[in-house]
Image (tube, rainbow, N blue to C red; front, side, top):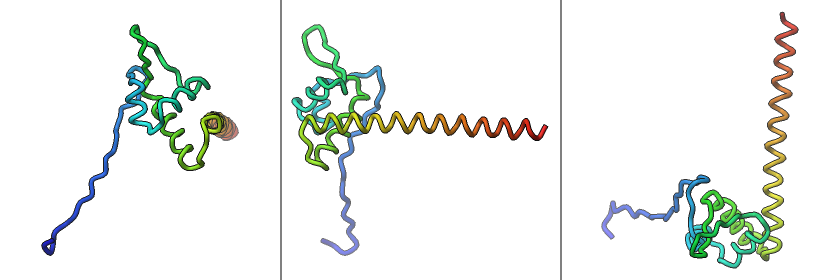
Length: 123
């Protein structure tokens, strides 16, 4: 290699615009998430991901479910979880996110109430 030559490493990044109006097939979800079709089926059975059936019997998934599927894959890989444990872990993470959202909303209401009372006290 000549001196001054720069080596560039190319990393493949899958970028997908996630929304509730775009769908992907089971094959695409398997490819993008890193989960097997059986693992995705288990998430569907647990109600964590909802599949829509087409007229010809194929399953379609809203693309925003890719976030859940990728989270499940990371949990599976990091903690060596079986499908049942994976479902429990995903559910617990979702519950934590719900509670954090509620806590943030409650803190915002408290802050708003405090500001309102401070303003009323100054008047």
